[in-house]
Image 1: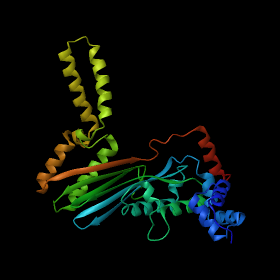
Image 2: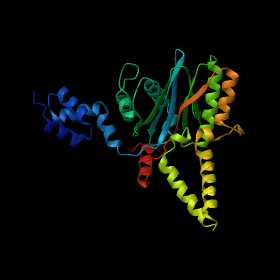
Image 3: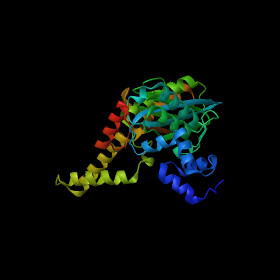
Image 4: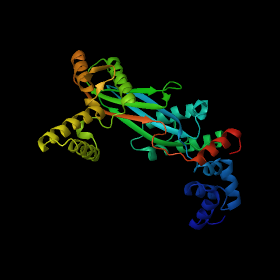
Length: 313
């Protein structure tokens, strides 16, 4: 058996485009024979997956999963991408997205840890996706994930543009910490806030949480606009502060007007419901994942889509 050297692994990596660890495993399995290792990678679908890895995946699904945890709950949301929206209708892809979201419930970390986590005690998320790439013929990635743990209370979920239960194009999680015993009412409140978040896409939970750079940028714009009025400096300062308050009302979740009752802010809604349920309710966190958000497509990607659809990939 040939010695599995770093140079040999590097050679196979360059020939196959597959990751270093998989290349090393292939060489170990084949006694250091490069050609046999290439065949081993092809058999496992890894070589095919590597060829598709550069194709941009901006479609797919956002999946959510929830689990009761005694007095509290755990919730997770993941974005699993593919190249075309047709894949989102594929039963195998939908089952995989659900399984990945369920796996994320026990992953304390980001998506890098998620891909190495095992799905139902079997293959890893990364291996599951590699198998799907080989079967379906499109590049796929687990792009983003978020997870909330509430010791007492609920994590509620809302999915917008759902294609199937817990699967859609926008997924929202809302964490509500509360000793109120009625979990059903807390969950309904969280779901309504989730619908609000899906519609308004707030930048932060509270004024304190907002990115200072965003405030500086808005203040500079408002100041320049106010100075064009030609009014005294004291008046301009008040005008700017008024616009900053309006900015907070537009982008800070707790300050936003509730979409189902514009006369009430989210902060006021929480206070009202806390009074009705007889216990304080603290909104400790939220996340909104929109499918393909921030992914830039190029004209070449559409050629890849056509190839996938015509079986020429």
